[in-house]
Amino acid sequence: HKPWPGLIEAYRHRLPVCDTWEPGWAPVTLREGATPLLPARALSELTGCDVHLKVEGLNPTGSFKDRGMTMAVTEAKATGKKGVLCASTGNTSASAAAYAAIAGIECAVLVPAGKIAMGKLAQAVMYGAKIIEVDGNFDDCLELARKTTATFDTIALVNSVNPVRIEGQKTAAFEIVDALGKAPDVHALPVGNAGNITAYWRGYSEYFADGVASSRPRMLGVQAAGAAPLVNGAPVKDPETIATAIRIGSPASWNQAVAAKDESNGEFRAATDEKLLEAYRLIAKTEGVFVEPASAASVAGLLAATADGWIEKGSTVVCTVTGNGLKDPDTALSSLPEIARVGIDPVAVASAMGLTE
Ligand code: F0G
View 1 (cartoon, helix red, strand yellow):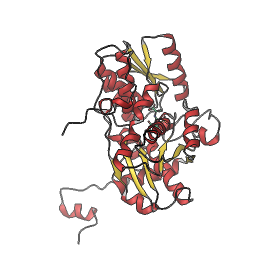
View 2 (cartoon, rainbow, N blue to C red):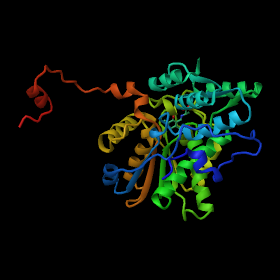
View 3 (tube, helix red, strand yellow):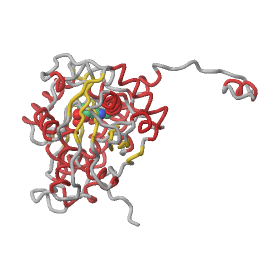
View 4 (cartoon, rainbow, N blue to C red):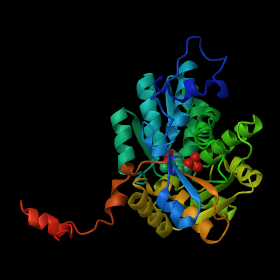
């Protein structure tokens, strides 16, 4: 039994690891990928479907971004870049910082001032990235990152507009088909900058084209209601949502996301912050999986789409939960129940538990 080598080694024949890279290049890896596909008992019972959670918060930096980042930083290193730069709502910056740290190259992250979750900031600090706050939102940060990297060619752009990011992220779809033995009927996931829906659709389509899977899922892309440009059909100037990870008004992979929806006979949906938080609590309490608020969008979409019949009972559904709940302790603790306080007294403890009988 060989240890998991990380996704570049595992899926090398399906990834564009290039002839133009320096000879002797090696993967920059934290052994990302191979995340659990967890059967979701409570959600299955609730919806009448066969629901599975793809738990991407168990990647090395706690989000799916590591799949793309192993590719992007490997490429940056193998093509002689001196540093990497990204715009981020938090997870991309945490991931870029970690992979740059092990690659031994500079990393700077452009983040919207005051609008990223505390855990993600802590990660970027610890991995040693230069944190640059921008007076603006994610869309402004991305524009600045694009301009900077277009002007300075020793700096690589590691946002999902970098094509190798998408290539790395498509491996999640491979893992799902490998684990289920087939493609699901529906795949639900949160959508922000729209890189990930693009990546999953590519992964499913490649396996379908090669006959590994005999079908492809309908893609259900879920946005926060206050940041739902793809649902509205137009960019949102001042996106707002508690799910800061997907607080994005002008997704870079707009056309690819629409193609994924259209080609898969899928749809985009919006979920209000209230619905996102409901799903966020439900996943933790019933499935034992603590995700960040944005990640709950997939499950909020599942609940809405099974309630109105867009997803038929009996369907096999995979919901990607994209990031770990520990990244955003503030949101978790904002609805703190009353905390019991006792002396060193077993009866008081049992009584606080309501289990004195
Ligand atoms: N879920 C989480 C936890 C995210 O961090 C993101 C994006 C998404 C979903 C949406 O994925 O952008 O590919 O549609 N986070 C980016 C970042 C924007 O900077 O960390 P997408």
